[in-house]
Length: 266
Length: 196
Image (cartoon, rainbow over all chains, first blue to last red; front, side):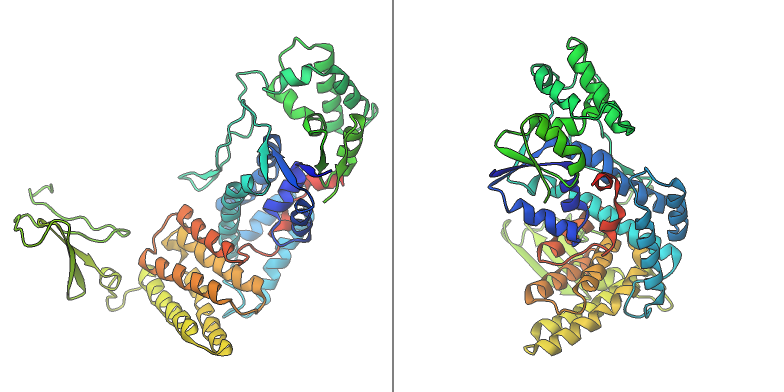
């Protein structure tokens, strides 16, 4: 395969994990392919997920003006928030390191409010810079979504990030609806690839969304259905000449294989 | 027009100060621009009718005895850092050059303390700090040195800049191979990879 269809996880590793091993793996992987194709659906998911999480953390720092209070607040959210518990440990470790370092040279400051500002500014910077880079990391951006507008994140007068819109326009039918409905066989194959008895909420929602498309093709496909389809969108729209490049093989591999396509890790 | 009926030139922080002569005396060609300096004020003449004195940054934020203004402090610190970087650029010995750069780095925590000047200012200082941190002591290349020097000079000329403008400078640092993010920032995310 000479083409790669870039899924959200890889986009995230490239844009929001600078200098990490994941970033290096992902950027190296892009070089393996002649063409790298970034669907706008990836951008949409990335903005609504990982980028939103960074903005949340930024806003929490703005609100509390305290590094330690932000850590406590995030820890209280627990799992399932996309913010890693180990990330909090990492932040705590950084704070400890900065406090232990010689004040004169090794750190900007060790005060709680200063640390809050260090991370607030760093987060604001990476959110805006990563947004600007998003369309330049692959050879092409494909599968534009006419019902979704890519609006840059902006900091309001109040200091908080505004990431709207994170969803498609709710007033019109999903622009992918027609193409999806035209291939019920593919939809059925994708549905069968999701374990019927899966206890995962995202699996249940995906199966339900696919069922709706198969059984009620005349019904309008709204933005919630489109969002629930999630990983199935990649398997459906990935060109036959391309592989889905993802770090989430567990979800993407069975879906891709069910429609005669392939998923690869970076 | 002021309440007293007189025109008062407004001075803005980010703009050169221009005063417009209203005598309409035509002394030079309209496409000529000349500068003259008196007591730190540069007079720019654009065309015949406009004399535009550009007040030097030193005069605009002149230090008053006992002044604690953050902007004055920042300008002093930036000057020190720029002077060290200028020496570093001139130096032909890489070790000497690196020593000057290290001295310039010492100003960063103090400059960060002046971040209430604005988020653009804060982002640049923050980015520079992490750029140096992520180098782990590796000296700057001559290209990187030039970019850092140029950005600090620009910051000294326009210390009050927007977040957006500050981020543009962070991008310049990034484009010359400097890593401007906190080293642990990438660890903050989970979610999508949890399914791996």
